[in-house]
Image (cartoon, rainbow, N blue to C red):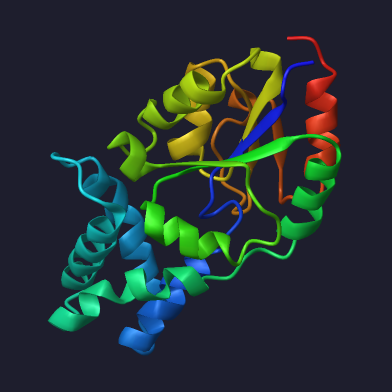
Length: 223
């Protein structure tokens, strides 16, 4: 029997990065945390797409600088690394532990495909309630999703039948679209109630509480 893999995006799917960035922004600029988060979200993909490739800690700092500048906030030089400092402490969603423990117990292997650095994701992994069997970072492939490199590296190292691999993610842009392009089964964890076309996903969930049931349903459904 082929090894069955569930790959996950980390930030947004397992870890509440909106809370993490918003709270850090509030510490830097009291009363402006929500605005800073909004600006950050609009700018980050632009920074990730710039060449040459830069590690995620650089992306975090540069995006924070540009977001603060857009809002005409005075970001001190030493504060540009604030997100790198706080990222290991960003909260894990409460539905993560029960879902991952159930799936591991049912024989699924778990992997992270993350737009992050190796050292930063290692710190985050310490706070995840279930261990992961494999991790592929942006630093490993010198690219950021929605580039296909994470998925292609995973397939080259762990690949098996397409029916034995399901990708689970919150970001429609970073994860669901590229997974669909490659024909990987995909579950969209739409935590924010976004209005993108749900037909692009094989299943859509509001969180991870129903993930084990959704995975079972996809695993037994012929392609």
